[in-house]
Amino acid sequence: MFGGGWGGTLIALAAVVSIVGALNGWTLMSAQAPYAAARDGLFPAAFATRRRGVPTFGVLVGVLLASLLTVVNYTSGASGLFEILVLITTFSATVPYLLASGAQLYFLLSGRREEVRTGRFVRDVALALAGFGFSFWLVAGAGYAAVYQGVLFLFAGVLVYVWMAARRASRAEGVDAAEATPAVTAAGPAVTAAGREATPAVTAAGPAATADSVI
Image (spheres, rainbow, N blue to C red):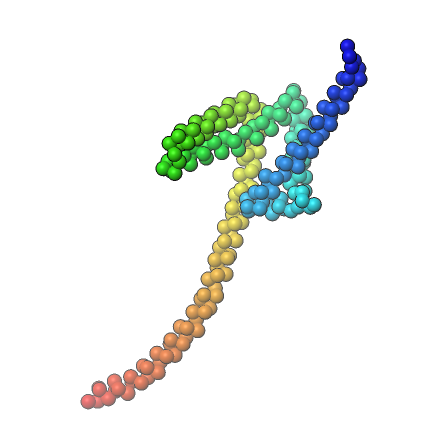
């Protein structure tokens, strides 16, 4: 057969180059979502730091979490380690598509039908339903183990969201209090001046009232 041994070696080297390139690309891209969330105030500010145009903190956290997940699954003696990791990745990547399809259905069915033409409305509803059904099928097909571990990661993200929401609320209250303080301070001299203007009027009215009482 043409190529024999060296053909297989060449294909293996090409596969290694392709895998390394794809791994680097996915590793760098995995930090973009936390970076965008941090810029919107939904993630800690550390994820918004960049060095040479790369969100380094997000890359490090992503690599550490992936390594930790690999070690946990390996030490637990789970068979088919690579398959479980692929299924967890599938679940994690599919959930945003599932939520986006649901958001599209909500937008179309929440009394905004007049903003979309009838033909496009039917098409968009059909596409949203198809996307939701396909995403749901992928989530169900990931298996119990992948869905279980993926849901745990989602629950851990809820804690981050609650923490950031509480920080935003406290900052908003501080800003409102700071804006209200100058207004109260500025209103103070006006009230004092009004009191001073009213005092002579009362004093001037005093003799007139006394004369009336004498008469």
